[in-house]
Amino acid sequence: MLSDFSLVLIFAIISALFIFGALFAGRFLRPSDPNTVKSETYECGEKAVGPAWIGFNIRFYLIALIFVIFDVEAALIFPVAAVFKKWIAAGQGLVALAEILVFIAVLVLGLVYVWVKGDLEWVKKFAQEHRNTGT
Image 1 (cartoon, rainbow, N blue to C red):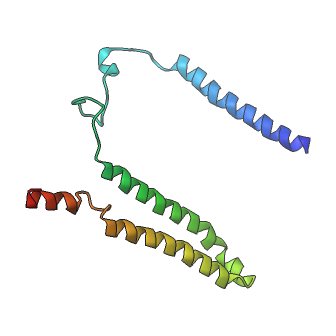
Image 2 (tube, rainbow, N blue to C red; image 1 turned 135 degrees about the vertical axis):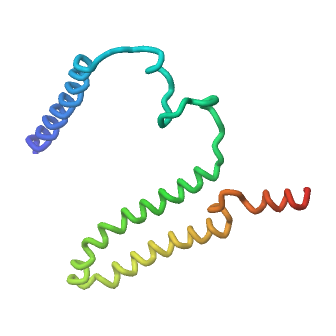
Image 3 (cartoon, rainbow, N blue to C red; image 1 turned 120 degrees about the horizontal axis):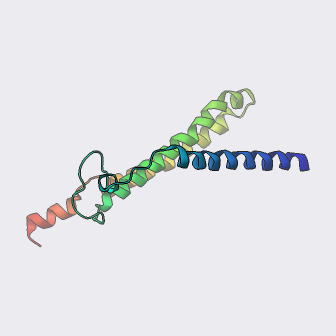
């Protein structure tokens, strides 16, 4: 048992040496020519305009979180799909299918809730109605 942990420790030490060795070697091998042009902020080839601390619309974060939730859902379904044939052969296919369907149903209900609430729209209808009525 101790030999199993020692192999992990040896692997961790070798990987740390590899990482820090590459950083150390890179520091001496790469050219160093600092100047003001290289020190400027780089944004996709465009010159930086305005301050870096600007406010983003909160909708961006909401939509990004919804995307992450469904991305994780897809990542969790792939392993189940990979072993589903084995579960059918073991007589557990119907139970596994029911679990998958419940998992997807919960996520679909969450999507419907967010959709009905209007969080998938970039500009909420509430703000447009207030502008039209003048209140």
